[in-house]
Image (cartoon, rainbow, N blue to C red; front, side, top):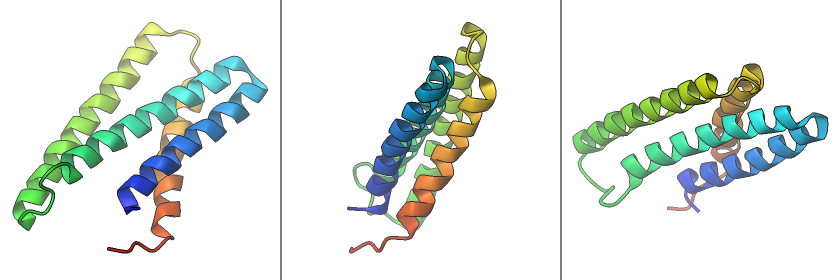
Length: 119
């Protein structure tokens, strides 16, 4: 399993764990955590697909260009998703949603980096 796939799977597992823990406290906390982790996972998926999609064995300058384009799409998607949720929902807990987003960005990446990849 590649590092990219591993990160995405860890993000899905993080989403499940955070959502269950949040639902144990309160429904709105669980939903806020789920939204934050979902936004993070979708953003990572967009970046991974843009960089490591088809023909990902290219010259370094093309890979760098693909990375920047994918990162721009990721940022646009994440900012748009947060904006829409903040504007349409008065009951979502912003701190929980943003915290879940950052947890889903950092912990799965750290866990995936601790494992060896066989190329």
